[in-house]
Image (cartoon, rainbow, N blue to C red; front, side):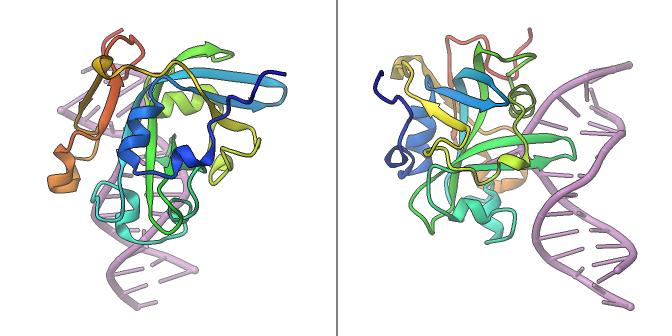
Length: 189
DNA sequence: ACCGTGATAATCT
DNA sequence: GATTATCACGGTG
């Protein structure tokens, strides 16, 4: 058997900015009902802690955000605007609350429909709140595999999307993407 | 540009 | 328990 390529918990046990940069070029996999769906991550956003006014955890520990305060390497999935799910990977040691939103992947296997944008991505993978707080490091059906990564010179950063309410935090360049990819959200087809 | 949609959390009675 | 404001989006015009 080949060695396990599943990314381990130590990878996530770091500041969200580092994890967001390094998740680019890795492979997000969801296995359910005998189906394997996989895509290469091409766009992420970091939500860095309770002091980050764009981070849900800045409102304090609530039932929804509880998972963000838990151990790293778990999923944080929530419903927004009544119809769209967003998938995040929890980062930082337990007790701190930070996460990386996966905004787009390049389809690799088993994915139907568009995967550019956090809501469309979740729809294509079949991700929903049922996956909230799932462990990404223990074979629970959602995980990230080591891919080719994205070299620094192919990486771009800019302000996060949809967080204009967050005052000075709205402008911080906490969104990352692969400039070579045509699957990054917010561009014309 | 406009708005659907329903969970969430805060703020009431 | 009820009401209200808000929202890490996406489809349509």
